Amino acid sequence: MSQAVIQLGPVTCPSCVKKIESAVSKIDGVETVKVLFNSSKVKAEFDGNKTSGNDISETIQKLGYEVHSVKES
Image (cartoon, rainbow, N blue to C red):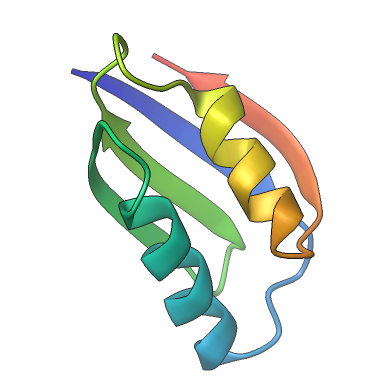
């Protein structure tokens, strides 16, 4: 199981959190996703054979949110 921490630009509303979590959770291979509102981070666990931190980042950007960095482990 791989993990990614994605640093976003400012997340301004609770509905943004739900929107991001909903979209990322639909990606094939994503097991868990949690948006940390106060720190504007997304933490995700996923199957590295099916998706990647960059794929998750691209999905978030397509929703209109700014991504500053992606750290995978």
